[in-house]
Image (cartoon, rainbow, N blue to C red):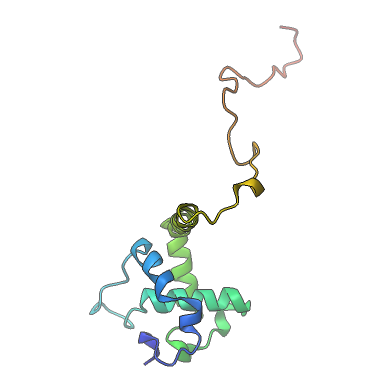
Length: 135
């Protein structure tokens, strides 16, 4: 029952259909049905569970299994999605959608060398000679 999100009173609040339409294409497929082990948890259930844990700050192991999976499954999915670059892609996609809608106030943005490499910087830079001998 919970695997298809029935009974998740807050699921729609955490992962709206609009958000899901943006996120779903970025996620790798789940393990195919019919393989060994427990039936795979759907990506939408996993995303909702991950957001729930991060929003409430409960420990992963305290995630209520009645909601369709265990906290370890959520943690593994979060790790796998991080390794697959999902969060970076999602961040870029959502920023682009906001920019396209004119909802980013660029006057409040800043960039410095810790985020953006300097243009025209020296390409012949070398470490100083630390041998103590005069060059």
